[in-house]
Length: 450
Image 1 (cartoon, rainbow, N blue to C red):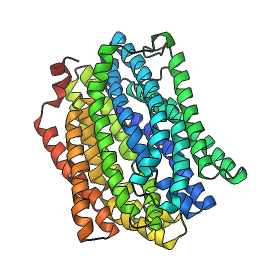
Image 2: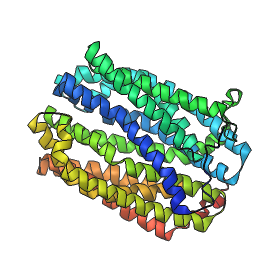
Image 3: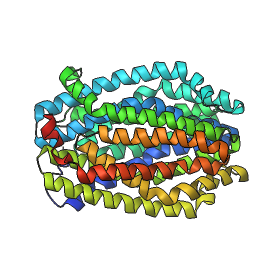
């Protein structure tokens, strides 16, 4: 079996980062198809109310899964570090502990999501005319959340050792399956929005099983052995130490976004549908950013593990520049084509107008979003996850909620809600940029003794 991993501690920096980012981009593209296929097929086959029902659940889904996925990301930082340092023993401990954590988290998410999601949907002021469909969708979705958490945990391990190609192959297959199942469940069996949720979780389970199969059969140092799956408590403490800040950050930001969503909900079903459609488009626009931030985190982690400090700094700079350029190119394209893109999801002129308004405000500012995430990726790769957490909690949570509470009553327009995003992106860039240039993040692992 040929080698799947990529050691980023030697060779041309730009070529290696782009080589790693390319399959990540394609993989993320097909990952996004999960959500987009639901929205397109639901919107076109079941109507605008069904589209609004599915769109209303997106922020809540992210709220519940983000804590566990964020903690699991701490394992990715450690895996990349131990892989770069060729530390086989700790590499194995980090991988098997992360799998045990993912299994536990998936079961907890299933119970919590099925029981409490309806209560949270009401707390978000989800419109009553779509409430029943939203509850159906989200309960079925969370019934299969074990597959979602396992896939993200296993994919994170593969990416941390530089393997972006195999997750890509699995995503292409399962995304195509998702589309086929969507059409079959909704169009042939008339299962409504519940069929869209079922199609998504079945495809997600398949992706997770394929990743697990690869890790069980690889001959390399990161091979998974079922008998070793369990909690190594010192390693679990390290995973939580590096991952909990990201998990808490994501969860609290998600709570702030629930507040944003509740403000959107106040403008009615058409606003929910239109902004929800734009959210799917923004998910695609975010793909170049996400590809580069994973590449940056892996590159920095591996090179700091190998004590290649100057190389880590040069790779970080290259990744940040590429991330911003790619994001801005996509953002300008989205702004130019906004009515056409939103119109692919809904034929309602009012819903299209709401989605286009958000695109005109947010999409041209994607370079700020990219730089904020890129700087955070550098610091997470260096084990400094607390710094991005502080930034995101302060600006993407506290400032967002305060802005909405003060400004929306004064200026009750959907654009008041839209502007909260680029404003908080810019503030976090300033905060993280100062730390990036002033702090000694390259020696963070050595100082921490991890």
